[in-house]
Length: 469
Image (cartoon, rainbow, N blue to C red; front, side):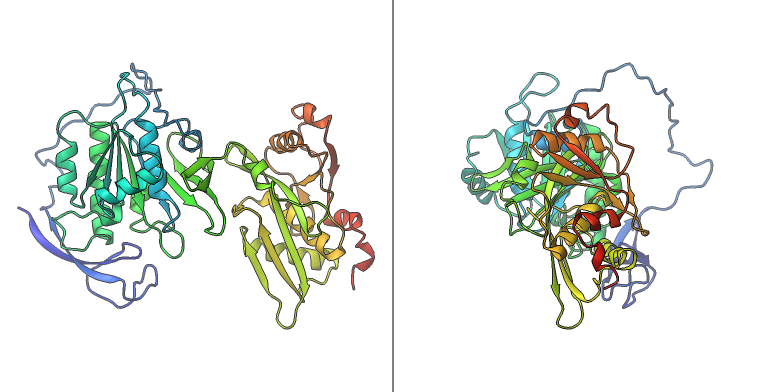
């Protein structure tokens, strides 16, 4: 017999407490614990209970072929998802407000409606909005030129109504829920968006998608820290977690996969926000470097890897005298990593950096996370200090150690091939571990300069005589 129980749940981290408290002991947030009433059934017996069914075990080799992936027609999305959408998969996509999540999914739904599923039938797409009315969605579709797309629209926030609709008749192929924070289950006595509601709504919708075999997109809000709002368990339940990133001051948008059960993680897709919506960027390196100017001090081209895609971006640095306490401002990179590079330059190379204001920017609004950008950042800093421009036809990559040594990075051949394709003539790289055979074509164009220590880089900029000053 089910009975109502009361518990206190933190709306920030999802921790459960037997009584109310002003501060959550799990995450340290204040005034985030609220009372929730749930219906819980009596616990079954540990052994010998009735109602259980015997499960069957099978081998890894199945009889049916399950390699079919639904191609959306948007290559950048298919790349991030591992080559297409798998039937029965659940994708959670989050991003800042106004970044373009609803625009992207509306374009994806319209593109999918023009392709065929595994049965050779047109893909049936359902778009359910809990934030906008049907007329508002139609206005966006008209602005994007998608007014005639074969997409079924609905507005609902009640998960019971949504499940009753999708669980009857032939199931759709793709379902979009925008957003999971607006959905509610009427068996819980808490407001939509709370940890309990998000967990319950996500669980019910995911179970339905797995049972009926349709692709489910869940839109999620993000917190002020940039993480997905709601319980962390929701990210564990879904198959794919996507972040839609971008700076509002730039027109580039990055779709980044941080979890994918059916493909590689850290894969990215690049889009450009235009008046007609999001357009794909097939060659982001050329676009990120389109506004780069040569013979400018403090500028350096970094050859990086995002997922499986090589990408060239411009790193800009500015070193200025400080009027008081030194300031560090970083856009698009890890600020603690910059502090480490500055400490290495001062301690191992003798450059006085602690009394300087340092500003670092990754042009184009892209955020870099891999350590291979260390050498490019150091090169941009030394270029600004020496007032000597980095050669315009050079790319740089390499990891800097605490002793000032330059360490090898993964996939140097892909980085060099991308640089050669875009017309660069030389590269400053870590010593050894470069597969010369795999970059044979690029090596005929690129001149490789191996940098073993930051002091070698100082010699190139004529800063050796300034050490210890």
